[in-house]
Image (cartoon, rainbow, N blue to C red):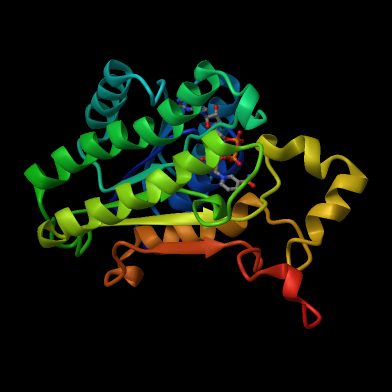
Length: 267
Ligand code: NAD
């Protein structure tokens, strides 16, 4: 087991699948004790916890809806009760509810904003309250706390047919930057990761269809779809003191998707 995050406690939301589950496992490999949040997939979370424990780590699964204030409070209370503190929040839970703009219902709009943006606000607020009270713990980390938001290349690339999702990630960017500015003096670091196309449940209908995958690859200069582990590596780095001077930034992990792939071959 590595030592980068020895003695630290992490909470990962939406950790029963995809990027969140890889993040929980990678953080634990580096010595962090992990709260594995899930919404409805209790078995998925249980298998992540079991995998961490098999490797000698510590983890618990915690049910919560990140878009619900009471539920978020209960989730943080469960982390404090089990591990006594918190050092790292990975605010990862997110959903898509796609529709042409003129057909998008208010329910579809609200659901995505509530999970992807309000959920990030509620979780980050709970973490910041604790980090401010607790401060830096010598010998654990040089920061009082680290927050990593899971954004998307669509914080930057407009996405027709997914206006609610793109708006949620664009909003998340300024939430991240403003919060980083507000809490830097308190030694709290706040950053985002913006993944490109990563092979998870959220986009299964694309990568499981050969023709659609071929079209998708045209958007990725590196010419392969990403895997959750590609993103988890970045999460570990942003959570550790290796990135101590990194604050208020977005790390794109996208195989070059944001490099205007239409210009490959001289445009
Ligand atoms: P995923 O569907 O496997 O993971 C999303 C997780 O969020 C699931 O475990 C789900 O149960 C959880 N979740 C949904 N609503 C919740 C709620 N209200 N409360 C708590 N948990 C909730 O897909 P993923 O790709 O691993 O997505 C993780 C994050 O990465 C999301 O924020 C997504 O927007 C972002 N992302 C993914 C990609 C990609 O290509 N896969 C690209 C860019 C950004």
